[in-house]
Each structure stands twice: as structure tokens, then as C-alpha cells.
Image (cartoon, rainbow, N blue to C red):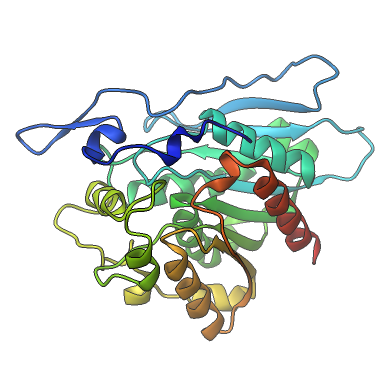
Length: 322
């Protein structure tokens, strides 16, 4: 999962440029550069390759799709858990084809092992929230579509919804939708949520945001700009999409009695927000497992394999602890 350390040293003199955007005089935005390299799927790799991948359409009208990761397995072996994954990128950049998410999902699929379904949803500012929530909820309902890989190799009765960063925010929202639509999802059955370094915000600064305001990975100015681009026009960071302590209704999750894993690192400016979400869930009676660790940073698994290995172990123990 290693990548260049350049992500830690980017300048924030022009936060829009860092996101590959130019702000126009009329308030609109133009994408001027690809934010990150991409990797193509490969459904027929050499026999020595332990993982198959393929891209499948979900909603051609919205140009949404998913990349499925399938570990090679004997036909007689038990079906694998299914993890529906939503990538990060502040709702603004990156895709399911981004090379670092390709590596991340591949590592998880092989380590668990599990069938991973990584969703490519619409990005802001062209498609502001709730577009990403709608796309990812549609992907959840799509799981029962009859895709051959899923029907033959995935245990749809053992599904998890997972996201990192902005994807963690989406995972919680999609989880709420799933808890309201249990019959509609059948035969897929959700067993829990995994919120890995979820991205939340608010108007009042937290202690970790103040302490790490100049953080090189995700400085406070950058998070403010991301929320400006992602939230509905005119909304501030106390909107329910950003700040779950304002209006997020959690009763539906309680009724499902799901297990929820919330993770984070003390070197992440968002750590206090992540702990707050875990507290809110726990106070509502949800079974929450917290894994907050010293050091680290936002997205550290993408450039430090030791953190990636530890996260895979945590994830595996959570999913297997049925």
C-alpha cells in the first residue's frame, strides 16, 4: 500500500489547485488535473496472481460503477464475507480506480479473505451531497443484482459496509438507509459497519483540529475547503451531513443491533470528531468497537505498510468475531 510521501508535504497556498480544481469567476469549478494515478481492473490475470478484479456498471445514467475484488478460491470452499467499500477523497477527488485504493482493497480482500466491492460514486462540487449518499445506497441495493462473481463466491448473508475518510462518513449514512430497508436488501444481510478514519466536521473547532491545524496531510484550511465544495450550497459545517451531533438519527442502527468499528489515529486532526461519533453511537446502545492509536496520520496506510498491516489485523478480528 505504499505510495509517495509527497502527500505529506503539499502546499496549501492554493487549496483548490491541490484538489485539481480552478475556481471560476462565476463560482463554478473546472477540473484542471487528475488528482491521482489509476489502475485498471484485470479479470483474467496469470494463474500465479492471487486476486481477480473487474469493473461492473451500477447506474449508467450517473456513470456509477463498482470494482469487485475476488480472491482465487477452490470451487468447493465456503463462500466469503462481502465488504461493500466506499473510498475517501473528501467527496471531491479520487475514484474506485485510484491506485492507492486498488492496493488498499486488494490487501484487505486477500488478508481477510473477502469479496470486496469498491463503489465509484459521483464527486462534488459537480454533484454535491447527498449525491454520493444516493449513489452508494443504490450500490448497496445492487448487491442482489445477480452478478456472477457475487452469487457464486460471496456470502450475501454476511455483508459489511466499510468506508475510509469521506467514505466512512458515507458508510454511516448508507448504514442508516440499510437499517430502514432490510426486506428490500434481502438476501443481502448487513452484519456491521466499519468507519475507518471517518471524515466529519463542525463549525466549532475541536482540540485536535486546533492542535493539528497545520498538519501536512489534511490541514484545517483544506478540510474547510472540502466542506465548502461538498455540502449543499449555502450550508455550513454544522449541516447534518458534516456534523452528526446535530441531527443524525441513530435509532434505526440500534434496532439492527449491528456491530460498528470506528478507527483513527492521534496524528489525524479529525480524531476528536471520530471519537465523538463513536461516543454518540455507544450512548444510543450500539455495539461499538473503538480502535484509536497513537501516532499515525490521516490515510497513513497508503504510505506506511506497517500501519496497513495492523489495520488489516484489526479488521479481520472484527469481522471474524461473530
